Amino acid sequence: MRYVERLLQDLEYVTLVKKLEQAETDRKFCRHGLSHFLDVARLAWIMSLEQAAKEQKILKEWEKEQIYLTALLHDLGRLAEIEHGLPHHQAGTELAGYFLERVGWPLERRQRVLNAIQKHRGTEKLKDDFANMIKKADNDSRNCFFCDMYKECSWSCERRNETIHS
Figure 1 (cartoon, rainbow, N blue to C red):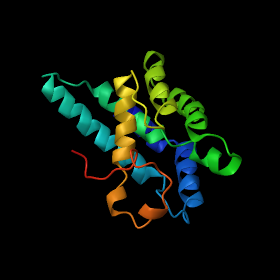
Figure 2 (cartoon, rainbow, N blue to C red):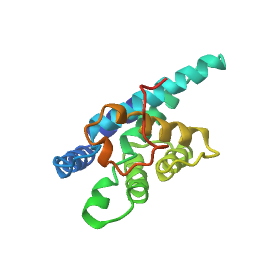
Figure 3 (cartoon, rainbow, N blue to C red):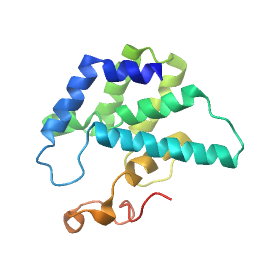
């Protein structure tokens, strides 16, 4: 996954992720950082493989990269939310576009990634299957059923993950 490797080796990206992790060190609720990003990527990849098996389809390498790039970028805007009060999905979409360009992700594939990042919040069902998968993987990556902060969490009951991904 050459584009993913480029992103993970990009000093600006790494610095931003580390800064986000540091900013959320004392956060009581779900934290955002590389571990969360990879959880989302892996769950979305599993979902894609399951869907492909049902359809007897073989996934291409770029499809895997698209999932991982989206997941690695989807909450990057959290720092702008913490520092400036900007909605993280909006700030994150702008940052994602910047990093997709830096790693050379093909222009014709960028919009799908950006759309999924822009729409990954909330509970409404989207028309875009890829964006829905990223949103579901993002929610499923949270172990709400095992969280000490469950009673204090502001997430709606319909958004909370009450089981292990199935």
